[in-house]
Amino acid sequence: MRARTYLKIGDKVRHLNYACWGIGEVIEEKNSHLPGGLCLVRIIFEDGIERCFINNLDHEMCCYYTGIRLIEEFSIWET
Image 1 (spheres, rainbow, N blue to C red):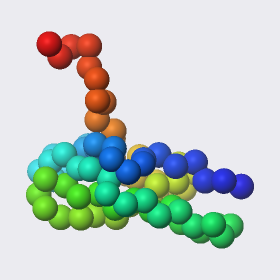
Image 2 (cartoon, helix red, strand yellow):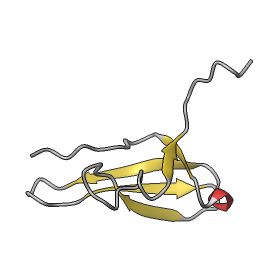
Image 3 (cartoon, rainbow, N blue to C red):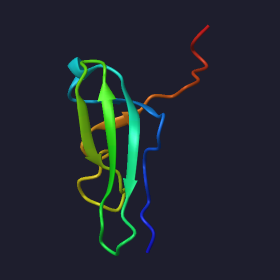
């Protein structure tokens, strides 16, 4: 069964609970080809720290469920 990944390289993100981290960008994506293996992403935030998160939406500790949200590239409210 193929993992359902949430983020890809270059995505801009923020954390719902840690605004002090600032905006982050996905700089690396690793996917296991073994059954039950992890899918990971490495994100560098504006505070200068790289953090690693699980990137599989089927995993209970996926970065989406722990508070990482994509920042939309386009907003109809921006002028």
